[in-house]
Length: 348
Length: 136
Image (tube, chains in turn blue, green):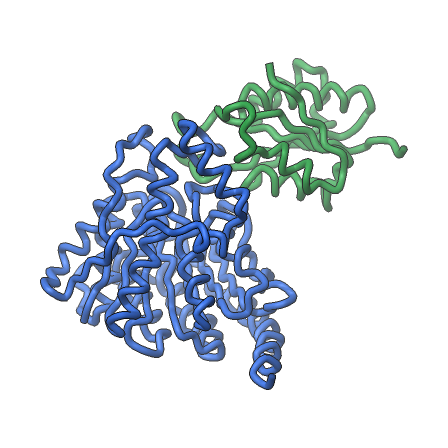
C-alpha cells in the first residue's frame, strides 16, 4: 500500500512561537509518517502552490487580493485567534496546493492513501474571511477541483471544531457531501444537527454535535449508524477527511476524550467509505498537543494502510449516545429531500 | 421612529471595544434601554493569557458601575464563534436588539485594513442600525 504525502515546505520562522498553531505541528505529523517505515511505499508529491483559478473556486477574488496584500504588507492579527505574517500567503497557497498535488498523484497512480501534512489548517476559512487559524480552505480547494472534473466528493470532518468554512462553501453544492462530528457547543458556534444544507443541496450536510466528554464509542457509532447510510446513498467517487486531532483527550483546545486508538478505528471506518483504490486522502486540520498529534496521525495512517494499531486502546463510556437518535431522525428527513434531488438529476 | 428598548454591544476586552461598551452603556442609560453585552469567544480563549484579554463578568460590571448603568439593565452573554455572527444573532430572538454597537477595530489590527473587520461586515449584513464607535 502506498502513502502519498506532500513535500514538506514550511520552513518559515514563526513570529509567535508559543501560539498553538505552529510549524512543530507539521513536524510531529511527518515524524508519525516516518514511524511507519514505509520505505519505497512512501511517495512524496511535489511541492506546488495553488493557482488563483484553483483558489477562486472556493474563495472570493476580493478576499484573496486582500489577504495577499495584508500578508505582503507585513501581516498582523486578523481576529482574536488568527494571524498572518509576511510569509503566510506563500505558506497558505502551498498548503492548498499540497492537497491538489496529493490528489493528482493518487489519480496518476490509481492506488494508495493520501496525507496532506500542511498548515495552517483550513476548515474554518470562509469564502471571504479567515478565521480560527485558517486562511485558505485546503480541503475545499481539493474537493472543488475534483467536482470540476465531474467527481462526487464526501468530506468527513472529525476535527473537534465544526468546519464552518467548508460547510458554508459547499452549502448549496449537491456534488459534495459534508459530514462533521464535533464538540458542541464550542467554537465556531455552528454545526447544529439541524444544519443540513441549502435549498439546492438539502441533506448534503450532516452535522453530529457531541457533548463534552464524549468518547470514541460514540464517534464510531456515529460513523457506522448515522454517517455510513448517507455516504452509501451519496456514493462518493472520492473521500477526503478533514483530519483534526484536537478531539484527543490530551489536547488543550476542547473536551472530547478520544484516544489514538479511536482515531485508528475511525480511520478504518472512513477507509471503507472509499469505493475504489487511490481515492482517499487525509488533510491535517487541528491538533495542538504534539505528542497526541503524532500518535494519532500514526494511528490514522497505519489503520488506513491496513496495519494493526499498537497504541492506546479505544475509549468507551462517555456521553453523547442519546443525541445520535435525534440526529438520525433529522438526517433521514434531509436525506429524503436530497435523494430526490439526485434522482431528478440522474433522470435528466 | 420607534423607541430603542434593546441595544447589543460587542466586547472583546480591547481598548476599542471598551470605548464601544462605555458609549453603549451611556446610551442605554439615557434612553432607558436594556443592554446586551456580548463576548464572542474564540479558539484561544480557553488557553487564557497571553493569548486572550481578560474578559470576565467582573470586568464588565466594573465598567457598567462607572457608567452608572444598573445591574438590572444589562446582561452578559458569551457565545462561541466569531463576533460578527454572534452580534447579528443579537438582533434576533431572544435579544431582539434594535441597535448594534461595536468598536472600530478589535485586537491589534492595523487601521485601514478591511480584512477581519467586524464593523465592516456587520454594517454589510445587519438588519438593524449599527453604530461603530471610533477608537482613540
